[in-house]
Length: 163
Ligand code: SF4
Image 1 (cartoon, rainbow, N blue to C red):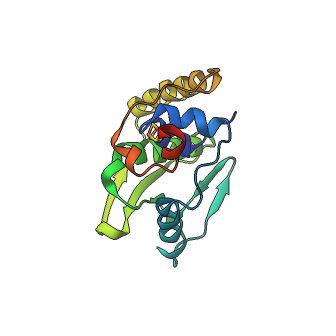
Image 2 (tube, protein in one colour; image 1 turned 90 degrees about the horizontal axis):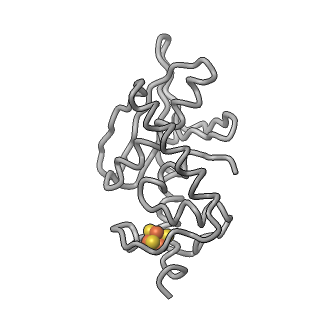
């Protein structure tokens, strides 16, 4: 299956979730965290928000100046900043492969915070290793076992894992 930015996010939070996504096992759509995420996505940065599709990538926000393209990703919380960073790195890498050098910014509207993200040679190598590992996880016959992580409390798959 095609890897996408969301999988990079999950990979950095829970490997089991990567496998569940790869099998199109849909999380609980009525989970309050799914709803809040959607609400923020739809309502924030409306002025700039022209969601743009590029291959299998969708960007939340794009800020353009004459010299620089900056893509943005809106998040509810900076608690999973590391995972969000790699999601955005993945998008930057996709653009780079297409000859577009862009920068990224993670936006946390509820915290009034933003973090600049830049794709370096080192991060590009790390990203490639993560993508290879994601492929290996997706090829497993069974999901990785449940490992309690902080995200379990908020995860829309928690009924699936813990019942
Ligand atoms: S409930 Fe926890 S172990 Fe299960 S998929 Fe979600 S984060 Fe992973």
